[in-house]
View 1 (cartoon, rainbow, N blue to C red):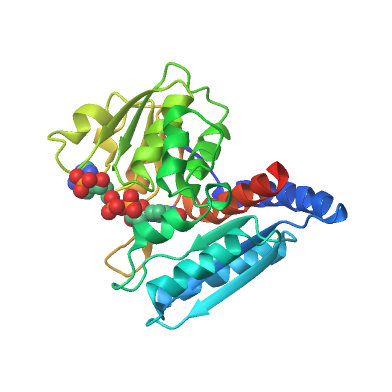
View 2: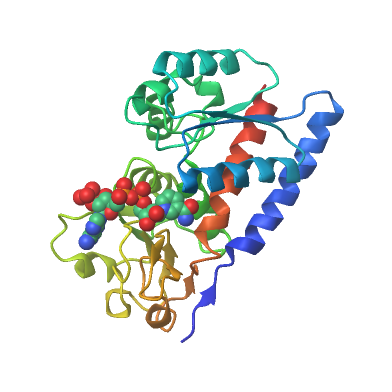
Length: 281
Ligand code: NAP
């Protein structure tokens, strides 16, 4: 059996076209969606991430603001900038690129963002909204994974979903979103003794670990959907995920590639949260 590829690039393009037409409709009413991105310091990977986010905004017709600050920016100054953006009616989403320099408390910064503009969905209030089923912003990566699963046409009701990883930004919200979609959910982590015992029972596996070959073909139930969030490097320095793609594609029914699976969806869902924020207003 050879699994069907879940193409994150194609799905992203489709969703971004929809977002662009929603943005055009808002702009025609004088309410162009706006995203502010703040970068503190010179981290090279962060520079690339913020550039990609700002470019994606332009591509779908959003207004965007990129605020870059030196690594020695004071915490109080950053909090003051966030407060100004909270009160700026042209801005519907605020994103502070992580990691921040050590002297700035990231929790304080995330909590300073108005919940109505927390398009990363990282604040305690946004997490609480997700937990209790209230309307709010879902963290972009797990939200993208849900869209990828939805694109297979498989109904999650009654299915057993296993999430590997329990971070606040991926694993835990992923588990909650799957639960909301009526799956029976198991969350595994580094203290799970026999990972395969759980994954072999799963109709859907989402791997969000950061270690290649965490999931191998012998750990997958035939016909399962496998979503690979991981971003790692193989021995040749090539980007790879957490799952043994070559082996698992012979067992699974659907699988996301790395690159070209979850990755492109993350920025797309940031745009989705921003348009939803602008529309709510
Ligand atoms: P993280 O905060 O480091 O969390 C990793 C999780 O994996 C932890 O919960 C950890 O368990 C668990 N884990 C570690 N070793 C394990 C093992 N042997 N068996 C089972 N679980 C194990 O990482 P993250 O931020 O969630 O990201 C996970 C991966 O996704 C990384 O590769 C990251 O680069 C990637 N990522 C990709 C995107 C994208 O857009 N494509 C976005 C976000 C993240 P403990 O909690 O017990 O330590």
